[in-house]
Image (cartoon, rainbow, N blue to C red; front, top):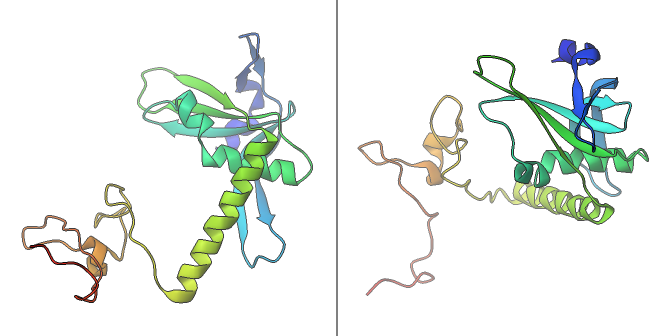
Length: 193
């Protein structure tokens, strides 16, 4: 990925007029770390490319291109734009440069998105709220279950290594996944009639 960005002459971005302009990378894979007053945690990210036009570019190789709706709701775009804003160097926009995997010839698409200052502030609050929830789970050991439709809540090689021992990941004798609830006091849950 670094070599692609180093060859900035081969990177292109759309302009507002619909034409394309050559990218001029200023940094590649730059680490950003967000720290917040009173917090014992930080948020770390790596900006794939920072362009001379004040654009943050993320390079993706995927089976399909991102849609505009996915870009507009991307937590990654929000986080990286927030990082630049908190550094005092707000980026003009965030652009996903995606190369479609398996295409017979180069199939590259650029999908750009922007965030208002209000959206960045809301994302900062959401990030802090999520970190506080994780800290509470670490303190209490009371972790919730992952959504079962997610790949991370499975026994496969790319799944969760704790799946077999997790009450949320138990399977029956036929190998089918069953939904298990943590043990509860019988007096607390109503019984079916």
